Amino acid sequence: MLSYRHGFHAGHWADVHKHAALTLLLRHLAEKDTPFCVVDPFAGDGVYDLTSAEAQKTGEFRSGIERIWRRTDAPPGVADYLASVRAMNGGALTAYPGSPALARTALRGSDALILGELHPTAYAGLRRWAAGDPRIHVHRRDGFELMGALLPPPVRRGLALVDPAYEVKADYETLPAALMRALERWPTGICMVWYPVLAEGRHAAMVAALGRLPARAVLQAEIAPPRSPATGLRVSGLVVINPPWRFDAEVMAAGNWLAGALWRPAGRSTVRWLRRDAPAAKSI
Image 1 (cartoon, rainbow, N blue to C red):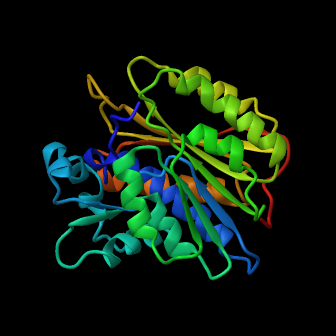
Image 2 (cartoon, rainbow, N blue to C red):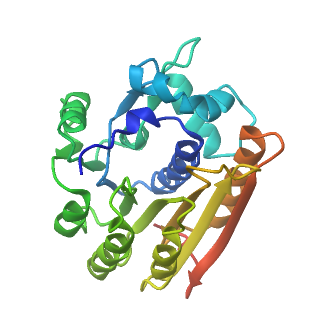
């Protein structure tokens, strides 16, 4: 399906949660001089215009990034993420970085970013946004097909962000199977999965399957507003496979800060291990 456009939802509180965690992982990758690769199979747009008709129609960024983008008291990772948002805005919040833009900010000269996007408009926009940057490779192909074809990446040290739109119910079953195949070829790769918790509860079986993957460790992190809405998104969830050392404590600090900064009274933030056969690696 090609109907989903993230421009309607850019800067939502779920984006804030996902992108703060992504920035934390990028910080870990950049701690070493050796090159790394980021793979984003469901990339969307590089940057979102918050003055666009799509963003203004829903106004979802107002309950997310608009509430916190000027804050300077955030913990590490969240602070870097907010600095990236402020860097592309002046006195008013008019633009929001998608995951490709956040990843690009972390790239050094020998690092790489592989992007996949099937929607023709988003793909064309990504090509324009990445033009002239030899570190960025943009593919028009299905995200799950890209994972099967391009994982592991040429640079084995790296991260895959897996966040399909979940418009197709089969995505909840396809995703664990795709990651199983990817981990068979790329057992050291870090994979971060974002998922929505909706009233139907389709995420539960998927999260359980992710916890059974043959990885050394699988971590789950969620945030939610203080009161569940009657319809729509109830919880923003992340599953991180092969998380780096200290990431559990860092994403917990990030989630706790976001739950308090985004909502009054404070929302809920939880972190737990789904699997921990071995300690997180100190060096990635």
